[in-house]
Length: 301
Image 1 (cartoon, rainbow, N blue to C red):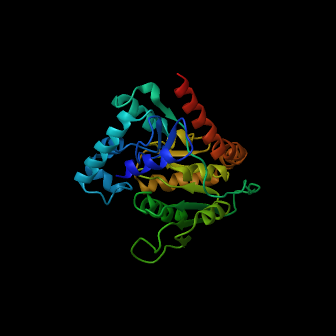
Image 2 (tube, one colour; image 1 turned 90 degrees about the horizontal axis):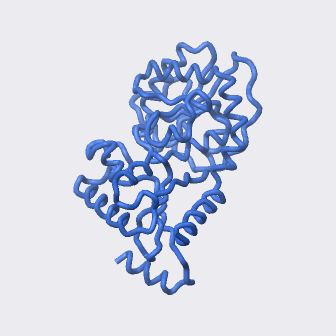
């Protein structure tokens, strides 16, 4: 019914050569292109039906997940092209065979939060450093691991460390908020940008991330990023250059990484120097131009 309603509205609108659907909401035109972050089949393969509980589909039952996956694959087979946000997802879709591989494209999304270009880097290794964690879905984003690691890092660091935690409405862990942690609670996107402008390092070792635009936002603010070496994160963060990618769930090892990155003024300098190019590259005008080029090229072939 939803598809039929959209088709009627498209027919009554200005004639068009193609339609871009944000997500697989329906095929409303013979030349419909889908723009998405990840496919359900890919999420199921990566995490398993039980592991999906760690994703944004945690409230779905197994039968609903399978029904959603079959519905999506049916639309994939009938769509004119799929534009996904990462090579990580594009590789899976091409291998799946649900659509010819030459009709699968990659266009990363753009920055949403307002962030300023980075301030002048702090000089002197004895000054305090601030880490920032943002994640409404605290467990999935790795928040518990970050807090545990920070407690160890703060005890062992030779400089004062602070951690800002934003996202959950209330403090998500038992007991009082540990020393050195500033709990910002639930925040609006513009406030996330303000917090990034107060931080020195962004950290979010998420256990599942379809893309992770917040990493791009952090880099655009000139912050080195600590993330996980999984999903699309390695496409955004260059390990050892503008951040560190971890392959473990060990709080003590993560604490060492926190200290190392906080003390690495060269990494911070590189992240700051790259901030303007990150903001320029991940813009909605670039996204629109890239998608328009893909659609017109496909229609002409």
